[in-house]
Length: 77
Image (cartoon, rainbow, N blue to C red; front, top):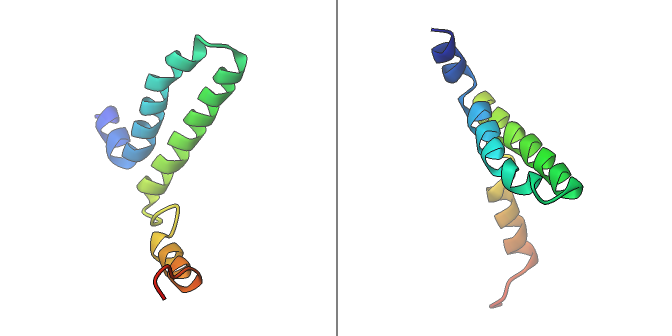
């Protein structure tokens, strides 16, 4: 019961951290700096999962970025 509630309320965070933990052993065997990269992967996975859980929208507003690029850069004027 507890695991089901945890999964329903924090699905994105759990998936983000689980995917980072899956990739971390690969980097842990290669040294200290790669271990720091592993910590960065954990942080990014947790943050992206948190955004998904809270339904705050995308981390990068792709529509605004595309509109800005369309106004700034027009390859075929």
